[in-house]
Image 1 (cartoon, one colour):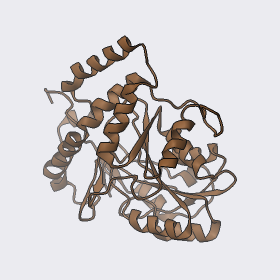
Image 2 (cartoon, rainbow, N blue to C red):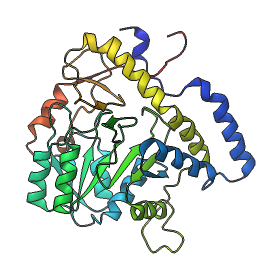
Image 3 (cartoon, rainbow, N blue to C red):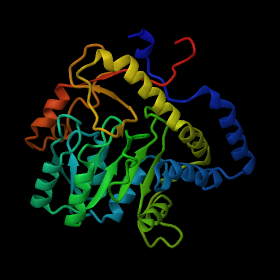
Length: 330
């Protein structure tokens, strides 16, 4: 593998620099640097891509807290996979819910339907937080969604890694009641800091709009400041318009350059395309960008849960570098 691919690069296409500066100049001239037309345009562009109504936020946390408050998790349990970033259980705790950890599948690193059913039976949770790991959609997403509908449990999707993924025409966030994306600097497309909530429920989207703005105008609902600035929305608008190209480029490189030399790679079901936030191999490689997560959350939080698949995954996978167009020399 060329040494250049070992160097991290944000997925920003340099051809978009002039367009971005034009948008920023428009923001400066407008004298409206927040709650303006670019945020509306970015939300519309995300909706056009994702197929669900979108609410822009200043980060993943704002969307997650809005969804958890809407699901009324305060004082109740929330099922969370242990193989996730600590942001997921920490958001549950911040919403005054209690995370209960479930094990993952070994083949996709995501929450299993068997664990979901076990924890619903045991804890009667208010919600399940399904996390899509590495850029693909959790393999059990359709059956977990059906289970949650049957049991009357809110299903939230942590889509922080899942930009550009699709499974037989369905995007992340479309299986449950809400999906929350991160636009942090390392993501497939990025605004540096930022996030997007998507939902098929108009009332949830309306709740999230109030939540990101202190519950205005009447403060009848909870909320804090999770607004996205117009400058950030400008980056988001440019980036989401480039998303399909970025995902196609990464998949082409993965299929032609990486697949032939990594037989232990994570295998996707028919009809699924990963956004390839991570190229995951079920092996321990010395030459890699490390692991998606080195330690499962139940270990970090010391809960004492016995989750053998989550422990196995932490010790038996690696991520091969795969970045979008480093620079012309590379």
